[in-house]
Image 1: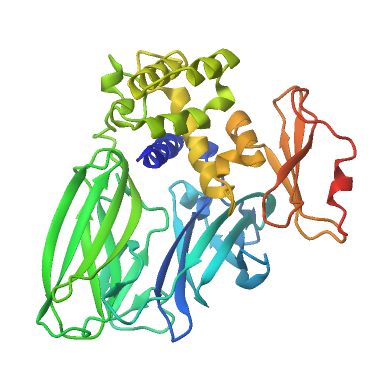
Image 2 (image 1 turned 90 degrees about the vertical axis):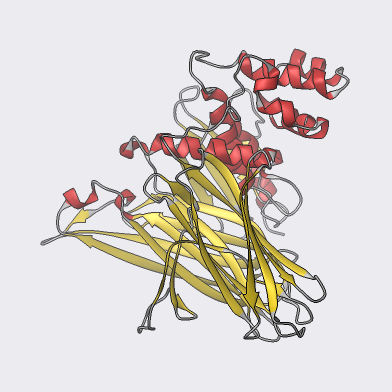
Length: 460
């Protein structure tokens, strides 16, 4: 539940950024769904989208042109070797820059056949006219074989629309008589009040009966079920497609999880897929979950958290805790005392107690959600990595220099912060080859300093 709260905070931050287009950087949204492939492989679709108005447009003789440069790589997690990938450029042209005043999202899908294994997916997007502007994602992906003995299910694909349509040449979103337009952002509400979903079911004729059952449910960030319904479906084909809609206009702003379960009516075996999505309804602000404010601890999210969840959250906020607070928390016994301290911890950091949200907590949780998604490794969550800590403490860097393929050098990154101490840098290196970039040096007076840090990156 607690991780969902962090995603709520992240999307509150996103919604606030929407009000100021000039402050919105070039970002890419990515989602993935796995489907049955051939006898040895799983078919994986990677969906991505980005706002083309965030690109830099250069005037030509008759128009304004931009381009996005994308690279998608699947690496084997155990060997760090490249298994497959694609790299390409996407050009965009407008006749008048006034057409860029409203957001225009480009959405596409890439398909891959992958053998069951654990992978790391790296996605890099850059502005072709200004390569200093871009975005990157790196996350683990476990591919498991889809069994043939019992009822089975693909991942859920979240969409902006699903319509019946005859197949047309080069229709990249067509499958199973439908045009399925993915929504990699997974953000609904204002502007997109209906969520569409697509999922495939397999092995439906393994048992002899007329029907099987499906259940669709949506739970909020407090694990409370807000939508639930069941359907009885006839067994006609070996596989089937389940599509449907969820109206989100009555859901409060926050994070939710959609779960679709298929149940065999004969042997009661079941297959389940879940996917998180996010709702921003300006008329329905989130309940007092991410704010840490309220008249008492019982009015905050801490009232429903277990002692383990409380301990986990305090670990994650130690970067901004004082020595006294860390020592005080270590002496507490019982969940009630820890709830009270965490409540007071954020209350005294609220820059404006008159507002219904704690702006500092939302910003912290937004950063925490980001690093857990982008900088996690196979061995540790993103907030425990050095890049995650620096990002949480100092925010997004003003500039990142990435050096991934220099001769006789292990990969490294240099982060620049222009407004800290007159300008500082943080130097991270991937010494192990497992994408765990550790801090080797910084010019920040309060951080690790080593003038010979590049010697640690010499390839053997």
